[in-house]
Length: 301
Ligand SMILES: Nc1ncnc2c1ncn2[C@@H]1O[C@H](COP(=O)(O)OP(=O)(O)OP(=O)(O)O)[C@@H](O)[C@H]1O
Image (cartoon, rainbow, N blue to C red; front, side, top):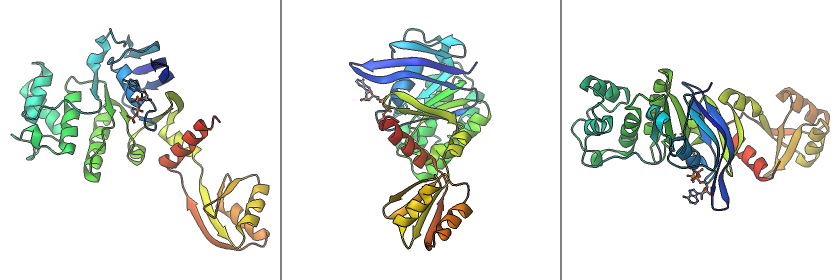
């Protein structure tokens, strides 16, 4: 049984379905990316999982226990950082941890947690949170989310507003915590960052899950693409289409996918006595795969 199981969950705001039969799982120790455009239903899904919001149908179970708006028992083992961490400007990092721990932790526990989440450096010390950078606040937010040793941490757009170095540091931190066994469910618009971080991908659009897979499988779906210019792209398009590869002309360049190899593409064009002027091989990336998938979903394919 997976650590988190979301089955056929629906949630409506008035007539609008923010979640429509949403089903997915998070395995223990996995980092799962919840990806989708603005308004897709990511925050709503996260709120339902954390018991912050009621849902109209379906079931959510965490560690074998049901999660509903009125049953929060399972939630002791979920840490969350939804939108912004609740940080008090006049408290230091340590004071925050003491506040959220509610007398359940020892000074040694705090020391270890601060070390683990990299909030024990000189920059932190006695400084109050109002003087922290956004990256420092996010790390403190994660430390707060971890205080009860959760099995799952839910992070809604944790990279928002962070500079590249802070994004890198946060990614390393999440990876190291996952290696120690904590599962993560993370939503983000920074797809390149998720690409480097997550084990599994769940794609949501208009409240519906349109794809879920491991990151490595997701990549294998995304074929290599070739962008070619010849002395006659229209003629080359016809030649390529005869081979049953997918081809189109975008921005004046011939785009080809579906061939077995670059050699096949070159041979086909040469045999038609056309001249290749430029050729680029474009390997897959999450951003492109996602945009293709969302476009296909919006067209109702
Ligand atoms: N409290 C609410 N009342 C009415 N509609 C809402 C409410 N919260 C969200 N919605 C609507 O539900 C849909 C899903 O919203 P949600 O915030 O879950 O999307 P999201 O994927 O997190 O988007 P974003 O990336 O912009 O945060 C949207 O159409 C949104 O307008």
